Image (cartoon, rainbow, N blue to C red; front, side, top):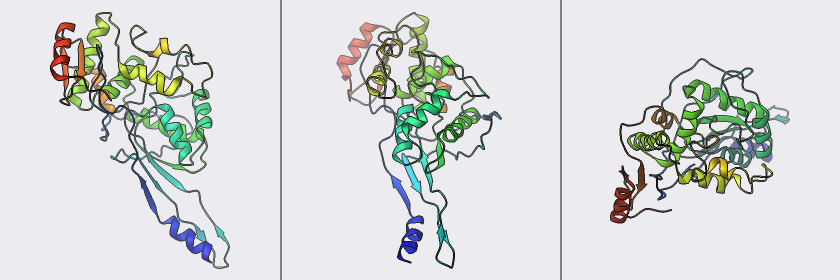
Length: 308
């Protein structure tokens, strides 16, 4: 009886985990990068009727300032004292800018599925309703396609079912951008907070691409350092720095560096009109933009560059 009473009490609890959000916390100084910290606001989205095959779309609406919440389902028992329990529901909010590895690790941490199983499911799954490139240059096949939102999972859920929920949500809410747009949006997501700055940052990168300049975005270098190099799931990672670090590669990186929200996607599609080629995040907590490197240096000397 004591065990049954404890189960009933615990099943009614809702536990909220106030953890750090995904993405960047502040700015990096560089020739082109960087900006203010990651947005954690909810995203409105365009709709699509696409759904991946064999998925019962079940993701909920985004989003909150709390990174995670977990709630247990109730366990029912019979009058004879025997009891049965349904799987516990785990509600998780993935905010804009979360990376594939952050999502995989949190799924494991909260008992949904192991990070390794989720990685293997993602690498091997073939999406039916939209295109996901199968490219050996992309270290995480589904990076960029795990749409930031609030989801309900079961403890011990099949990782392929977890993946389908997130892919269906991407199909319904992302507007299905081009691969180039998605990659650029993932960089913008890590570089800017406000919609205005997202569009200005987008203009800088569009202008640099048009001019044949390297993007030189700090978040791309940090993505390699923090999520690729030494990753036990990936084996030999030596080739990826030249493919993702935009101080080394020309043009866009080989794939997205996080899972961007709808505002960053729209900013990548609709940059502000500007001639800016440089920006940085100053000690005054503002972005500063310039058209020439000389202006860029003057502004950095005047305001200082805010480093994390």
